[in-house]
Image 1 (cartoon, helix red, strand yellow):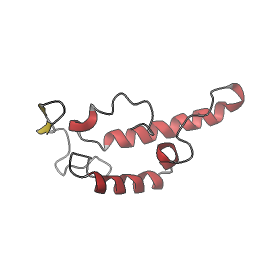
Image 2 (cartoon, rainbow, N blue to C red):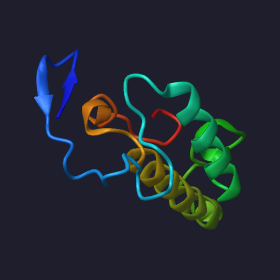
Image 3 (cartoon, one colour):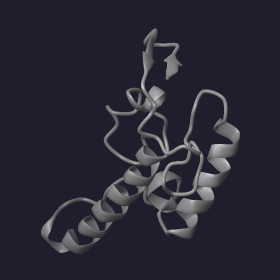
Length: 107
């Protein structure tokens, strides 16, 4: 169980693997490990060629129009992959705070 200071309730974290890792080999973000998590997640996203949609030159989608369909589709795919990685690496205690975001960059 972990205590969410903003929600003032306990959240069951038993579904997290026993090492506290995300399934990506990265310790999940919690209330006390942001600096370490940030370093690991950035390295992972750069290695997977996903960093540009998070904090690089492609943080916003191209216009969805006929001449740009391939670029728009590619951006959507990269953004979805980056969102999944980020969401998968954030503890249940913090997850409610990111659910409203619509892109990897916003997370």
